[in-house]
Amino acid sequence: MNTTYLPSDYLPIFIQLVLALGFIVGSMIVSHNIGPKRHSEKKDDPFECGIPVKGDARTPISIKYFLIAILFVLFDVEVIFLYPWAVNFKGLGMEGFIEMILFMGLLLAGFYYILRKGVLKWE
Amino acid sequence: MNLTELIIKSIIILVIFGVTLVIAMYSTWAERKVAGFMQDRLGPNRAGPFGLLQPLADAGKMFFKEDFIPSQANKWLFIIGPCLAILTALMSSAVIPFGDSIRYEGLTIPVQGVEINIGILYVFGVVSLGVYGIMVGGWASNNKFSLLGAIRAASQNISYEIAMGLAIIAILMMTGSLSLRSIVAGQESFLTWNVFTQPLGFIIFLTCAFAECNRTPFDLPECETELVGGYHTEYSSMKLGFYLFAEYINMFVSSAVISTLYFGGYHYPFMNTVHNALTGSLGEVTGHNLATLIGMLVLFAKIFFFIFFFMWVRWTLPRFRYDQLMNLGWKSLIPLSILNVVVTGFGLLYDIEYASWLIVIVMVVLAVMSSARAPKRVVQPQRS
Image (cartoon, rainbow over all chains, first blue to last red):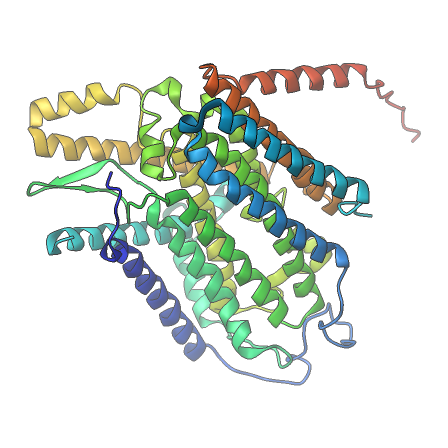
């Protein structure tokens, strides 16, 4: 396995991107053009099981989802810190392991805090 | 990278791309056949022998349907949503090693879109972009059901991504590399497959893969009893087709990643014996290429098993409630995977390879004890 990478080594990813984009744009254009087009006032409304539509979907939603998103950002950053450590785990030995246990202890303390705060409580 | 190599690479990518699309197409057929088998029905059997032309018929129908955009929707975002979903699904297969290597005119080319040393991070990065496709599409529809479905999908995907990332860390500690090819190379003999050294990690990863693909029992984003059709309620024609297609491609890719990470990829027992016999009898080049081909077939057999497993679970487990889903993700899987990392670390430092079986044994004992202690449910005779 080589350790240094030139930009040209990533060329296959670019080829795949072009292929995927070609497929997507092509079938989008085709399906836009060959289907029938009929409009009516009722049909253009959002589908809500046949009941007349009240307002639109630009309404506030439960704060819980937002909190989950914020927690995800926090925890995912912690997980990203673990990746380089995990790759070099064998080289770091016992010392690195103890340090990471301390880090994860802090992480779990924060986790326990949000659990007791009731952030993850769904009614 | 010279021109011959680049051309062979391009052919490999083209083939992988085509195979991905064909497998995704036939997964829809297989899903209905499996569903038919599980429910004692026949499944599709009209179009062609065994209904094999059904996916083509479906695709044709999708193309000829009206491409409908609701008047209140954000038009461009409405179009971009499904395109983004399928683009990320199609891009994620680039780094998966589908086979050992091909020898051609003195070149040795790995059967893989691109071999990069951050392989698994690439998969994670691209897969986590997929949530934008769902979120953008659901929001742009300007329909309350779509919005709810999209938000559910987003929060479910991001919750399970953490546990997924933590489950992989245990593997990275054992392999010491992020490259998928080195992870496969580390599982050469049968008993060193990561599923045997990391049983708990495997279970966590599998559960998270189900949640990331929005498959039953985690299909709350498109739960039809509550949300009509979930985030794709307003979609029709090929845009709906893209959402469904993206789901099946994701299923294929996650099956491939599971086989690569935990089931030895293209390795199989007695592989070296077979390789030596083939190179001995057919020559260094042909024999090697044939051995690579056998490895690829083995990998695809593993992938097909996991795709079948996805379908099998769909007809076995009922859907979770939303709070159960979140509790499973946050309160069970994340602490368990952190515990798994710590135990694996101890095991590596003291040379105990199968250390994480300890957690599995403790968990099984606890489960047996709690079910033995649980009060027996008395069956009440029903009054007629």
